[in-house]
Structure formats: structure tokens, C-alpha cells
Image (cartoon, rainbow, N blue to C red; front, side):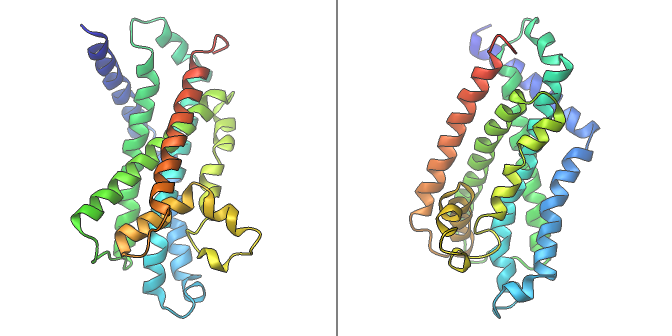
Length: 258
């Protein structure tokens, strides 16, 4: 069997293991998904009238849903950091290393499983958004495909970062704390309020962090608003984070101390 076939076989096995864990212990995934759903409902029904600036709740729903979709990815990947840290602290990865399996398949299984869970979470939150009034009638099939591709790429990038966070954490609790920026950053972006309403000193921070370009690109694809430079900036952030997370994770995973 070739090295590629071995890697694919072992990665599939690790993916199946991680998905079974998620199915048998769904409380963590449900808790992570409830956060963006509750924020969506909270901002729409409690703060929506005030934050819409007189444009109406339906306009604010259209504005907020793309940001919450990306926030869902950030919150879901926290579970990846916790899962990796748990495997490391319980010694299961040390056992895997003694077995005749492809080393990279251990991390690849976590990554693919996390991306699939992130997309499932996006579908769930998107369904809630549609139920409360979100519509994207102007988007073409190509724009829908581009939006889906952006979501997958963003999930892949954040997942590799989360894997690195899990590997450097001594336990699951520390991994959860280390990964908290993945939930906090969307709150400091254009997810809930436009950039022009922010203080001048803070606006550059919100504008050029990873979430804002991705949110504005997703809005442009689904709602027909201007994308401008946000498209290439979002892709650049995704590629940079994915590459950084991959090499960081590989270095920590192959470190003798691990």
C-alpha cells in the first residue's frame, strides 16, 4: 500500500473516531452552537429595534446573520482545541504513536471532523436565521457557491489554529480558555454594528482583524452589498491562518516533549 493510500485510510479511521466521539458526547457541541443561536435571537429581538437605526428588524436580520454564521465557526472550533488537548492529556495520542499508522492522520482526522461540524453548525444557525426572516433573494448560484467556499476555507483556517491551541494546552480547561479569542473576535468586528459607528481609534482594529473582511465578503455575496478589498483580504487571512496553524501544529505535535 502506498504512503498516500495509507494516509487516506488512517485519516478516515481517525475522522470516524472523532465523529463518533462528537455523537456520543454531544453536550460540548450543543453548548458551542447555542452561543451563536442565542446571540442571534438576543440581538434581533432585544436589541434589533435600537441597533437597526430605524431601518426595521428585517434589515437588521439581514445585516447580522452573515456575522453570526462566521461566529458559529469560531465557537465550534473551540471544541476542536478541547478535543485535541483531551487526547494529549489522556495519553491516547501517545498510544497512537506506537501503532503502525500514519502520524499525520491523527491531526487530519481532527481537522476534517471539525470542519464538518462547523459546516453543520452553519447550516443549523442559517436555518434559524431563515426561520426568523433572513432572505438572500439576489444571490446567484455562483455567489452561493463562493459563499460556501469562503465558509469552508474560514473553518479550515480556524481549525488548524484551534489544533495548535489544543496541543500547547496542558488540559481541556486550559484549551477552552486559550481558544476564547475565537468567540471574542467576532464581537469586536462588524458582525453586529457597522464600522463607521465605532470610535475612530478602534476602527482599524475592527476593520483589519480576520473576521471583519470575511463577514463583509459574505454579506456582499449573499446580500449584494459592496465587497471592495474585503474579498482578497478575507482569502489572504484564511490562507495565512491555515498555513500558520498547520506548521505550528506540526511543530508541536512532532516535538520530543509531546
